[in-house]
Length: 254
Image (tube, rainbow, N blue to C red):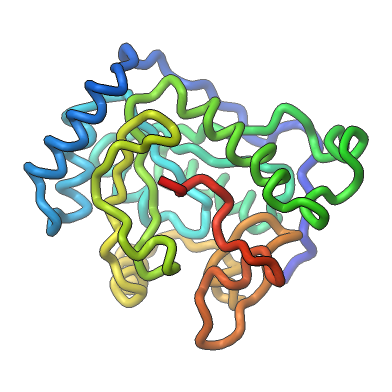
């Protein structure tokens, strides 16, 4: 594995968010989510879910990706070419993850929107002390993930995520469509029911881009300082925040 790179300089990707449709009220979005869940049912395919999303929200939704692979982005780009793709550029990513982000944008023709913290890593270290992640992982995640995500999602009416039920016990009951109370918009999880085998089959069949770290034994990839290889047979996310009673950063709490 290449040495981890702490991204502290200028952005390597320059993107602009598009002019978006009017923001709907929480009641309107909640009703849309309930209607969509009822119409599509529990067995809807990823394509059906993405087409429902596109028909109901147009350009007013964004696809979130941690750049572990390009499966969700490729699926979404088939429905809406040039779709907005949200990447949390925390400043702590592996060089492989940044490279995968750049490749995904180029290969699938999407618009990567980089959500960045207000402070660089160096600025945060100066204000709060070096390596906040080692002393207070929850606060580091809040500052470098939750707050930037909240700000970036604010203009949208819906977001599409790649969480899957088999990834962790905390995700075992992830719905296909719901109203995200935490962020105040509709949340769609098109590949929530997919097994690991189904993911791998799709990757091989469609020659999907995959983060090189996956082949090196990292089934779940986050920030470099907080990501380790999990023990064989353990929860794939157990390598995240290893040694702490933490497997989620707060993005998928609802």
